[in-house]
Length: 270
Image 1 (cartoon, one colour):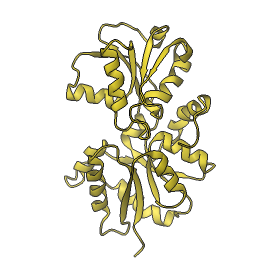
Image 2 (cartoon, one colour):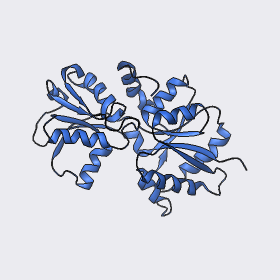
Image 3 (cartoon, helix red, strand yellow):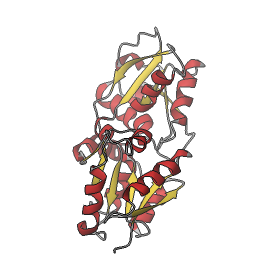
Image 4 (cartoon, helix red, strand yellow):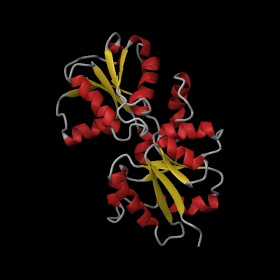
């Protein structure tokens, strides 16, 4: 029997351990067993994927773009969550602000999340330049409170929202998951309204390099895609990881981030 595939993931919250133990148990006893290694940040994880310490990496969109750059495109994406294919950035302000769209931000202050968060920092600047007054016409308040985790913790986005409540900013740019969590959990009921949502883009994916052949990744991928929302044994893991089903990668969804990284001079390394 072949050795288990080693998957890397970033420990951005304590329940990451529970999630990956559940995924490992799902693969146990199959023809595609796996184990996992947790990292404190995505830079270390990408380095470990490239040097062969791990076989697969559960990468954010920025980690994927950096892996593509460092391998001259030799890497491949295996799968992503259904929610990763329709990720969005939401611009929000205090209820009743009546900004009316991105043009309403001209001359105002926008709170952004951590500088390595695609959804809360990199892409918002890109969207301002493409769909609004231009980032140079907006005062940017950058809140780098969880650098290294690419915004996974949501902490910097919550800090950006707090800046709006404290009147240190007129608006904030956050990921759709944070926006939906605020409504669902009633963390700040009625305090904010969304005044612009971005086009959809792709977020996380499982990334592999050519040294791990498809003969090994194929059975693993087949079993991953077989996880079933209607199976009570599978659903808890799917719920914790924020999806209903695993799907094939939507690579064109990374185009906006590739452009943003290039335009903003963001390094290919951490």
